[in-house]
Image (cartoon, rainbow, N blue to C red; front, side, top):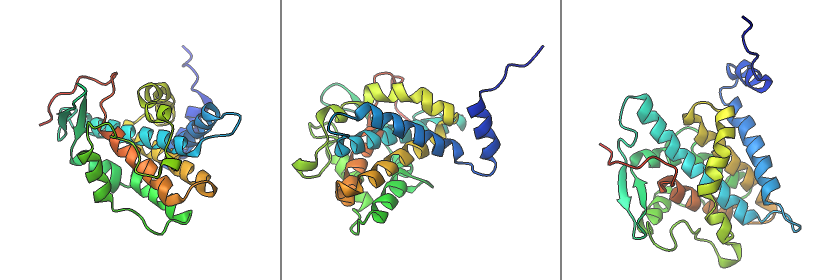
Length: 235
């Protein structure tokens, strides 16, 4: 019986993975960036601040997905080490050291990729990562949770700040195609955010661009989306 043929893209990624372990994340970032730009384009172009917010939100949710995946792979409860916090609107969020590690300290972390792009674009005053995380915690469940701390003229659109629940499941199949392992998703979406900062360097101060990416990433890393499994208290 003839074995089913493999997708040419899958074969190309598999062939290059030995030389470049991040090939799937790199190619996936290119494709998702292209699709986001097309989807967000209007007759006036792409609103850069909104693009940055969307990219940051996707990167943050990818960090949460990566933390959950590592726990499952290690045979632990999916939310092991994370804590569920109820919010005033009846929702719930996740906090914990695992999210901090994924956002700021892992190789190719969201912070590392985004801050590197901001520095290359000319940002000379990077924010303190600990203060970024603390700001997210202090505003957890409040009306301005996830709203970037940037001047009003550079605020993302409200639609972009509320797009994660629909955008994440829409793009997840594509991310899976390029990166079958969820632990690679934070890198893929971190590269997407990095590209957005680089693209927007002529339109917005890269320090502000970095702040938009990180404020939305931190909030989204904590967010439990409706299609996520019902959270249980981590051990």
